[in-house]
Image 1: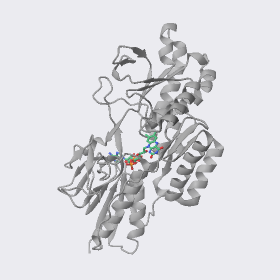
Image 2 (image 1 turned 60 degrees about the horizontal axis):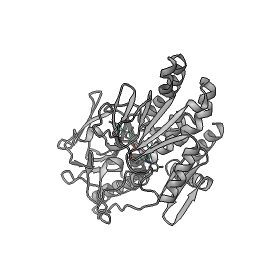
Image 3 (image 1 turned 90 degrees about the vertical axis):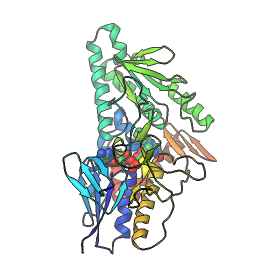
Image 4 (image 1 turned 45 degrees about the horizontal axis):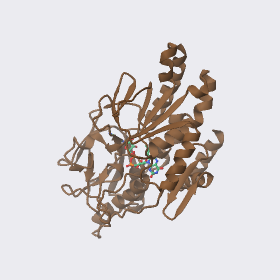
Length: 405
Ligand SMILES: Cc1cc2nc3c(=O)[nH]c(=O)nc-3n(C[C@H](O)[C@H](O)[C@H](O)COP(=O)(O)OP(=O)(O)OC[C@H]3O[C@@H](n4cnc5c(N)ncnc54)[C@H](O)[C@@H]3O)c2cc1C
């Protein structure tokens, strides 16, 4: 009898959880073949990539080979870049011309940056979305600091100014981490410390708009003390000739503009015959299933699933991605075993934001932490995740990596 193929697209937070759960659920069912497809042969700890981007830790720290996370006897891993999904034919197309068919599909391809049609930004490459992008940001900053020394004096400030657009968690964590690197950059490139500018620009009235106001005030104070200039309530109008133009007319020259002001569903999804909403995310029901194609599920940042309690789509965060991976795996198993489907329920666990070094804030509903306790809390979340996907060996590997930093 031909094997049924369960294909998982993307080895991110959602995809890895789904494939690991499917492996357990179908362990006694060799008639099902599990296939994981990802464009790299590693899983990225995207929640950590602000660190290699700033240069406070190596890129290896933010990734782990997929072979360490899957049972290779049960799961076939295909390293390939997906270019299109053809749900009407149950077919996936890859960049290199190969194809893959499926009986069930879980789409976990994550998000792309959203540029809101702001002139000069479409296709901008300095975005905090992958380990490779983080590497590029770091290399770019180093290059600009080195080139600044050779530039005419009046042009030098632009080389030593890093602008981070977006005052959400991603932009703020990167700003805090980069501020930690200022003394090293000053020393290494012989640049006066006071000439190095890190500017965070946020269109909304405040940074970290969804966090508790007292914690936000603390975060602002900490970052400003570290020398991060924070501009809020002033949207970016365009980016041209290495200058950021604010809507109110101010122009800030900078050779390094890092974009972290928003995300959208992976761009290939709108080109596939799947219904999308909320900026290119796949519309799914409570069971994470698409309406048109009952064998196609979506999970994580690329899924558009309305939370019936809030009426809003589930937030794109790592916790939701992991929980969605669990639900997709369970529902495919249940469908094949004649059981009822389980709904995805969004649970708010709060958030922890690093501000660089040991500074941070954590907002867990009634419990709120600042400084070292918040940083410890964030690290505990990371360790819990690493343990959940790789057990004690992976936790130990990362701890040793930390010690070697
Ligand atoms: C800097 C930063 C900090 C963050 N901090 C936090 C935090 O503290 N807490 C939190 O909850 N969330 C945080 N987030 C958000 C969190 O990382 C995402 O919500 C989470 O990664 C979503 O998981 P996912 O599985 O949907 O997508 P991803 O983890 O992005 O995985 C998508 C996978 O698909 C692969 N892929 C993409 N396109 C293709 C293609 N065409 N072909 C093949 N493979 C492809 C990618 O390589 C990747 O492996 C942060 C995000 C960033 C950028």
